[in-house]
Length: 239
Image (cartoon, rainbow, N blue to C red; front, side, top):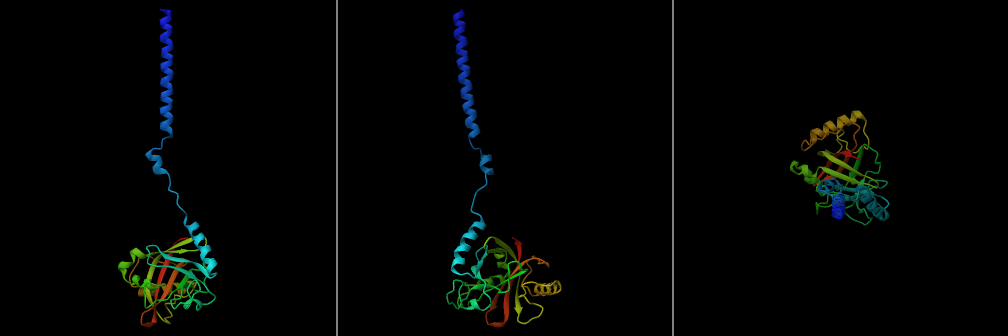
């Protein structure tokens, strides 16, 4: 009887050891296995906007030292490179990559710095092809095209700036109350200007620009109207 008891005792120890080993392996497998919650909480890694802008900026800057960045409508209405010269004449008949072209290039006012309140970009309205340069801006005259096209990015050397369109209107040449071409405004004229911009706008966007805000002004010609310019103003909402 003693020998039998000893055998059962040894068998019990073996069974407990095997059971412990199995439980340990199951626990370790469960601990290392990713759960749905872990998968959902893991952020997706993607290239940053800044890295993309830097890479492209260096490529284009090597082609033309006047290159500043890209103006890109988020929904694809317009995507153009823009430059800056020492005057506002150079790129009227020269493309951004320094080729002769009646289409010219989008260019920033020669007086501008990126720290100014008002960044002014000029571009031709191309009669023969309204899809070129600043021709697509004419879509914004109709309010039904506003929501889809209201966000604009400026892709610069080390940053991307985002703007939301606030006003679309016709500038009447030599109108002293609608001078869109100041890089910075004193408060009195700023208030006068934007009051008149509001009155001339094709529709109310609900976006208000206040004194001290930074904003973007896009200017192009109007078909068969030498006395007018189409102006699009957009408020900077992210830097």
